[in-house]
Image 1 (cartoon, helix red, strand yellow):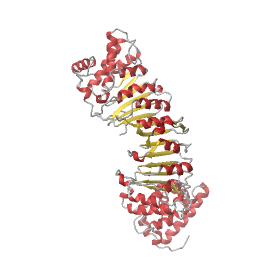
Image 2 (spheres, helix red, strand yellow):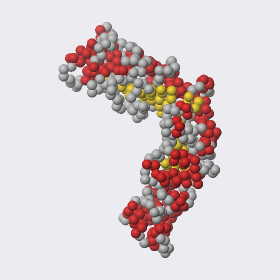
Image 3 (cartoon, one colour):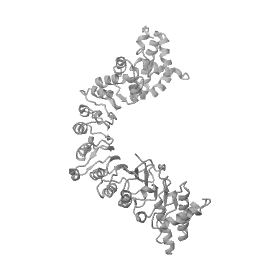
Image 4 (cartoon, helix red, strand yellow):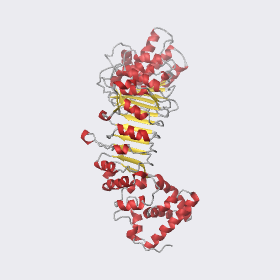
Length: 575
């Protein structure tokens, strides 16, 4: 037992309240006998060393600061059913993440009101432990917010070479101060994640810069880089990180609608070919296309499995043409569908999707309109989410043009969709009404293996009208169903809207009257249990509208869902 008579002031880290320690524990320390506390620390260190010899994992724990050791002891004494060394072993297993990996110790340590004491007790006594530094915009709204900048700057200024993770978020002068304090003289040999996000406000005059010296620092172990809503030099990335961080597997560049911060595809090409192990790539408003970009020799990213790109349709098309991704399994393309897009751009984009398609055969197709965006989602039976998602933005309902018709007619370019069986559709009539009169018919003739049609919260009236007119015409011509669209159709999901449910029932009855097959019987059985009252008026409306050539008398229930947002199960559409 040690007999050192340390004062309580030597044990307490500072006069204020420690954020990382509970009040009750602090009170227990202040009221305890200093000799007893010293004995606890000494015994705990010896016990930790004893456990470390057995488990070969906790040797560093014996070097932890006094307050952390006492906190471990507090957890240990609560478990009185076991011997003390065994309890310590159990406790240390839980604390090992904090000691070696978890950001709790390092992030909350930034909350200490006395940075010098924290630096001495933690940084000095745990020289072998990599540092995780997390600072987000919410930290500055807390009571301890004023301490964050000083403490984080102390770490990045004196111990940046020990940082394994540097994650900064928040548009404020404090983040800029932390960035400016970084001392890169010794490089960053342990850094494997660098993330700087949202440090610029929306006003152009308040954009914050990432120092070039940081991006040019040697980071040989860097695996993940995220630069979002901040000003940085592409040349610094090309000459720094791209040339020194060959093990990078994840790259995210997001400018959030500020195209002035974007780079040319040629320069992005030089950066990407420097990362042969890249697996995840996310680009948002990061590319502008120039005339010289069309002649680039394609580069192959062999390990890239996930791509998320958000830019103009033209930029998306050119990018997909110059980047080959043989291992791709997850693709999201978010394109701005504005009237000034070049003619045929959607067809070229579909051709790029066909070449880049991460799946040889898709089972499902989703077409969903939500909040001004149109999403096209390609799915596989084994995947819980779409394998490919194309989102066309800026689709205001008042927007003129026939972009939707162009999308539907060019879908046949994607040959891997040829055998799809499920179709999910949710479109308001104001969008679906832009389609060419025979577009759905041509669509169904090309994708004739569809067996299930799922209607979303905004059912497509013209799609149902096409199926009705096809069955009605075939019946009048007595074709016996030989020319019937979608011969394998067995299900059309119903919607809560009475008119659409009756419409589905009428289609089922017509198809069943044409041909007696398992498919038509299944479709009819689906509607057999539906019961409505006073449906004659609805049926007359359907017959009058669906049998006519014009759209003069559109039933009210067709347009009554214009204001609804799609809540179907095939996924949310990004704004």
